[in-house]
Length: 301
Ligand SMILES: [Zn+2]
Image 1 (cartoon, rainbow, N blue to C red):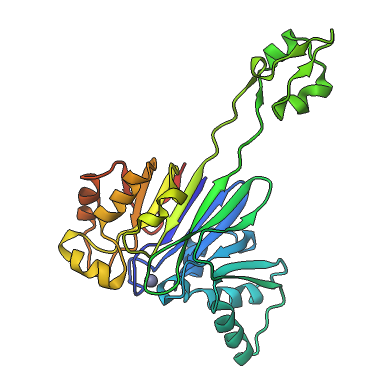
Image 2: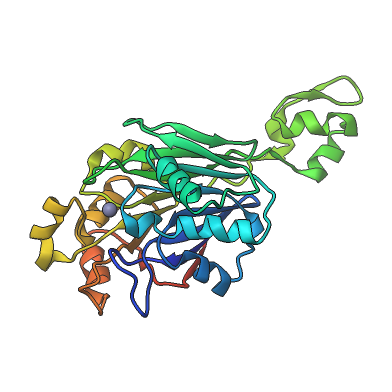
């Protein structure tokens, strides 16, 4: 799994950083998460092939999370894209984008498929044989979802020496990988666990922006490998967090700790901060390890 930060500040684009957007690669998918202004330039900078993006997940309709989308859709059209594009977003975005295309008479030559979200409980919104994506309802000023990306458990691994010693016909290998006990060439049943090993544990990534401190998300994000949680403020501006429905670095770390995640990435910093050191030091008083998101930073996990 690979996460590339395209933008990680809140509010307005800056010379050195962009509003929220990320590329998350998992099992041959290239998912775009949020699409703030400047996203398509950052996609070019990081050499992400536009054609590989088939699914876009938008957390909410504040501009710093979706103002780049109309431009990206238009660029796809100019590049004569043909592949379908799926957009998972709160109800309303379809109306915005459709009106924009209508008034500019620039309908796409590819299929634009909106999956409008309005549920306030977590739901499965995408699934194939390797990956699942669930929403994480968040507590923000408008309807907002985070997203949980999960690998499905893989097949069991054959211990090939044990399989050969047990004298099992190759025709049964498929069943062994699926966890079944099978007969050997003498007709004796061989216990699966004596000739196979557990697969790699499936990995998971939770993206949670924007939100106030919200323990309701804990059961959904429990034990994830990596949690990206917004931290718009540091402690000295804690009084701003609640009215704006954002979090501090310490609140993000508390969620990470209570959810027993393996790693926390902080982002969505207020543009009032140039030096981000305090975000890390304050969060680390509660939870470790903490990483700071930065435009262009890549996380492999
Ligand atoms: Zn917001």
